[in-house]
Image 1 (cartoon, rainbow, N blue to C red):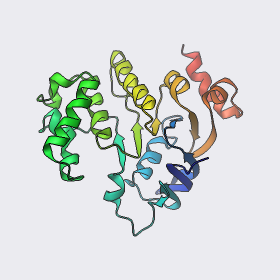
Image 2: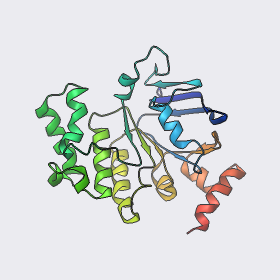
Image 3: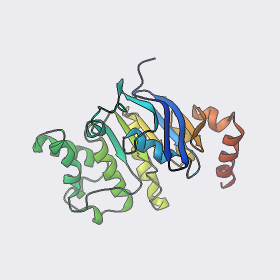
Amino acid sequence: MTQPVLSLSGVTKVFGETQVLRGIDLDIHHGEVVAVIGASGSGKSTLLRCINLLEQLDDGQIWLSGDDITDPSVNADSVRARIGVVFQQFNLFPHLSVLSNITLASRHVFKVSRDEATTRALELLDRVGLADKAQEYPDRLSGGQQQRLALVRAIANEPEVLLLDEITSALDPELVGEVLDLVTDLKIDGTTIVMATHEMAFARDVADQIVFLDQGLVAEKGPPAQVFGAPREARTREFLQRFRGGR
């Protein structure tokens, strides 16, 4: 097996008296899609924020392509430049056009020329059906279009890993599919993805690995067929039964 793109060992995070993450161990390899599932408050978003160094670990280590990114001497901004992130609420720059939202980091962080950054951005916009929106501002787009734009911005500089934090939770139901279709396309392209999600059917059909978090612990992990089809843990069965019961 090749070296993991992302490796977590004993990742622990405490807020006040609450231990939100309690020793998370996880390896994610190139091109793998890992779906992190669990009830609200189980630690999914905190886990992604720790990976992107938006939260400081209280214990444990994280390696990105073999580099210990939790070493105190590491420049967090340099690490974040290697990781793409999409949040629930888009986090687009409202005062910048669609095109400028995508090219900003390319030009100012990665020092790509304006022409090269623009060409790359227009290619990606065309691919996701937003080429005609390049000069619009984010508030002129639908929620689904804004989230597709956020995804394009996150992958424009070819990150080593893409973190997706409940990216469909703020969307109207009819817009969810178009965003998940784009995630499927990214998987086909070989993008390494860690996604916190409540979209169980999508996780079952698209992910390579399911990680079920329960009260800050990895209660169960494995391929979708095993976790969804024959979960080993009673807590996993109880959690999944709620979704099956709703269908």
